[in-house]
Amino acid sequence: MKKLAIFASGRGSNARALIDACRSGLIAARPVVLFSDHPDAPALAMARAAGVDCHAFAPREFADKAAYENAVVEMLRPYAPDYICLAGYMRIVGAPILAVYEGQIVNIHPALLPSFPGLHAQRQAIDAGVKVSGCTVHFVDAGMDSGPIIMQTAVPVFASDDETSLAERILTVEHPTYVEAMAALCRDELCIVKRKVVRRTASGEE
Image 1: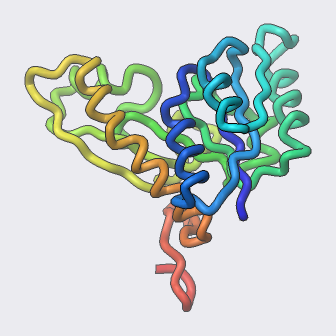
Image 2 (image 1 turned 180 degrees about the vertical axis):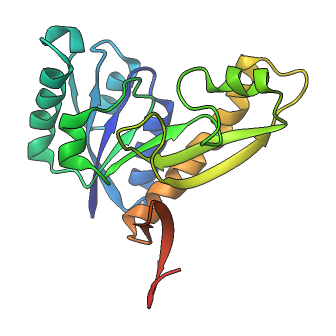
């Protein structure tokens, strides 16, 4: 069974969806640790209540980003996660973590990448006047929301939408999309070929 580390900075609604899916068997994996860069994040209490080990430390406690990320790597070492799931983790993953876990870090973003990367993706979508937005589950690389796309789900954007209403609509599809993507990864159904995520077949890749 695969092992998941989950990173969350806030309330952890996507983290809860992943933990619940593991417990129900939808994802053939065990959430072994939840890490937060905010020691007071609500996600920590949620994960502890679910019986998941938790760790938290703030970047300001360290001399620089590299020192912070090296501490994260050391924290993860005994858990040996197969995947790191970023679930509302509001920091760009840097070189120390990528050096150890590249190809194993997954994120969910509230837009249809490559459109509207970075912060305030819903506001970007509304300002651009798009008629469709959604969420993207993708592998993490050194860029800003630029890694290979695993799965996407679209939702309509209405003329009456503001940033809050669109964010709420996208959130309703984030949870099942993240669960479906991680379930497929944990069944070893997907692989990366030339920066594209493809489904494995008996004879190789589709």
